[in-house]
Length: 164
View 1 (tube, rainbow, N blue to C red):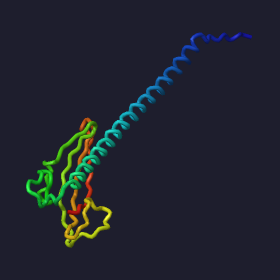
View 2: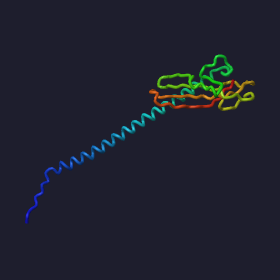
View 3: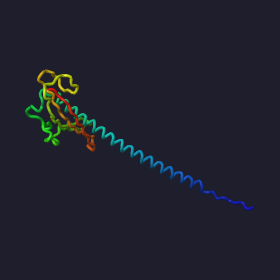
View 4: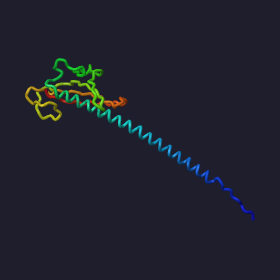
C-alpha cells in the first residue's frame, strides 16, 4: 500500500489571510457605521441649537411686549420689525440679536384687539394691570433661530396676549 503524503505547508498562511480579510471587512463596516452615527448626531445637535435659539428669540419678543407701558401699535416710532398689517409682514425687518451660542431674529405682528374691556383671569395674559378700560391685544411672534454655523434654521411662531 502506498502512503499518501499530504503537503500542508502554507495552509495556515491561507487560513490566516482569509481571517484577516474577513476581519478587515468587519472593521471597515463598523467604521462606516460610526461615521454615519457621528454625522447624524451632529445634525441633531445643530437642529436642537437652532430650535433653542428660536425659543430665545421668542422669549426676547415676549419680554419686549411685557416691558411696554402702552400698546406698540398706538405708539409713535414703532420698530421696523413690528407690524400691524399681515399683508406687510416685515420678513426682511427682523430684530436680529445674538448672545453667545444663540443666533436668532424675530418680528412681532399685531393681530387684533379684544372688542370689550379686559376682565382678569386669562392665563395667557402678559402685563400686570387689571384696571377697567384696558384691552387685551393679540400678537403673533415669529422667531427664527440658527445653529452656530448658520446651516440649520428653525422657526417658531406663537400667539400671545398683552393687556394695555
